[in-house]
Amino acid sequence: MSECSYCGKTVLFGGRTIEKRRYCGAACASRHGLLELADQVPHDVLRKHAQAWRAGACPKCRKNAGPVDVYAEHRVHSFVLITQWRSRRTVCCRRCGRLCQLRGALYSAALGWWGFPWGLLVTPIQIARNVAGMAARAPEQPTPSFERLVRLQLAQAHLRQRSKVRIASVAAGEGVTHR
Image 1 (tube, rainbow, N blue to C red):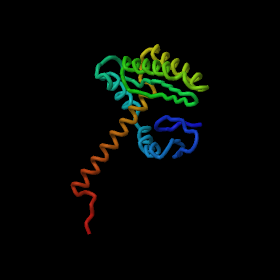
Image 2: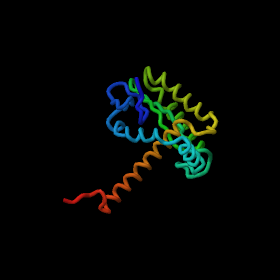
Image 3: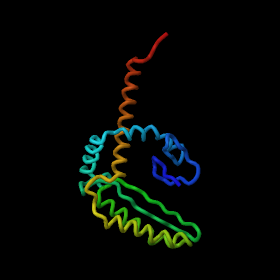
Image 4: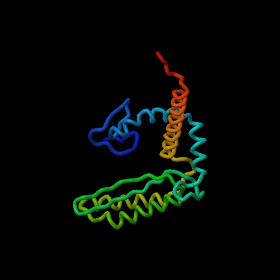
């Protein structure tokens, strides 16, 4: 069992491997170049951008309510023999992160128990994961998942900038040969 290098989903069967990276499908595999570029972001540049983003306004509530980071919400719902669970990560302030985790715990408490056997087993785990997340202190430093997100954002910005330069040079007639 492995994890997708881009989205983090568990890959049980299938998937693709490119240069020792495992992807869940073609969409994530198409991001391989972005991940390669993200790995090249210098640590000092990463630190500077991560700290600036953490000190900024929350993308959800638009307030400066605390350090912005990645917070995980865990949910489960069941009906007789069908149980589905997932974790969703959100970039937000601590307050919004706790609200998401509270909603996840309440959702799971109301809808998770109704499946046998997985609903009975997974529901307490998902509720406990949310409660642990709500009880944890706000991280003083950017978490690894937040740093990964910042790396990807910086790599995307670099690719967009490089693409604009390429388009501008083609529009100016550079690199075009006439016969």
